[in-house]
Image 1: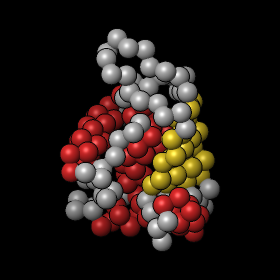
Image 2: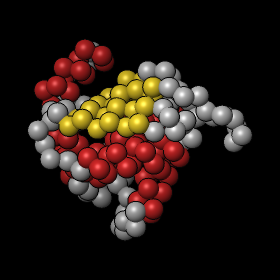
Image 3: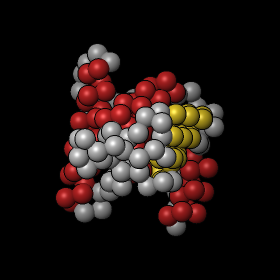
Length: 165
């Protein structure tokens, strides 16, 4: 899996953790190992411009996903996943920091960025949270991926609660 993390935000972030959690999420979702993903980290002004341009909504947001080849997890265990460009995830550390602080359990900006990375991967794979049933499925999968990744790294303590709305 080719994953690029490009930090254009001017904020110090744990780029390796973002890369690792993205790689874990993509593998867990059984996406072809030769597929490609890009993660771009931007400041609040750049995120606000993207949010306005693509969603027609004011203000910066936490994460945006831009799918390319519309890859999907294989439906069956023995099905070969297609190779391609998964797409781009754009993260905003300023929004992530605020959300992490306001979360019920309170967590760091980096933990929030890890959660948002998984959230972005799931959006690239066609998951959404507009309807209650979709939200339950997506957020359950998101929690399972984060918990699995944290366990694999030997991280203790509660996993970050979903703050994405």
